[in-house]
Length: 388
Ligand code: SF4
Image 1 (cartoon, helix red, strand yellow):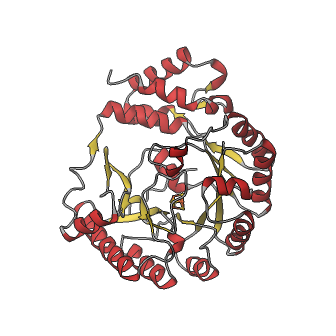
Image 2: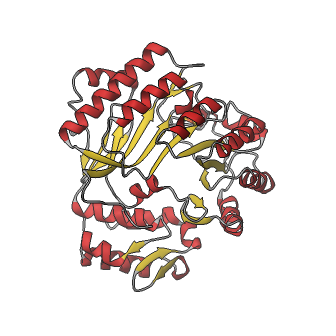
């Protein structure tokens, strides 16, 4: 996949927008969202949309103008918004900048709230892709996770998404208490049968602030589930192009590639993370604080950020690149971060990591499937190279 950097357009950027409303909190979730018990309050959504417009105006004034190459509307539960609120949101998003180079625009959806009226609206707008939070197609596992949908609802939502003509990706979770290899295989194969072109497969992990972590459940070893996905999905035409992501040829997520290629990503909405020219920043952590900052013109964006040293950026760029099947492109990496950094990283990978985990050729350095299975240990080693 080449990159899209046409010079006749303003600076092309990727954008992440956080929609902070959910019906209820799932047991494993540590993302920021407000559990609203049903539809979010109209007046609160109106304030949120107003603040979003103000944030866009402020970003355009300080770092703009922009052309938008990828957009990701995540959450929270973006599909919880009403049709009218989505019409307003699309208008707000269109004010971000030049959309003529937009390559991909994804919206996250929840099986319970993915309605036909929304998929039709998205299809008729600049949205191109749905990422559906399926998580499992086993009712017992969904209950353990504290999800509100059952397998039947998820399957119907998958079919609705695929039928809409938008590219469809499904999120699935492995390592759920009580999950078996048989039920994992069934979730994978039913998801494929529904016609998706992309699958993200994540191991269940519980951050201390996740509701389920109070109950301290025993989590099964995720390794056999992951290995199975690595074996099964490529046989069905889904290439593993990143540690947690599998896609049919041409259906990789361009937005996520912007993160893995260490490119700039603007953050919009409460608790959204952004990266801008070496500055990693996080927006106000709650909707309440975000609305307050909007009233003040977003004065804290840069103060709240962390500016990474050149060396830290280089190590991070190497880790992100190794997550993908494209790996570290030697020439591009050396041009961006210098030959000494490339040699130091290569020396670490040759000397400290088992040889069957890494592949080296003249153009690139990549992890093998076995290397991806021990990715966390490799990242820890690379981060241990420290500030030199
Ligand atoms: S997992 Fe998704 S749907 Fe569940 S609470 Fe978290 S953001 Fe909301």
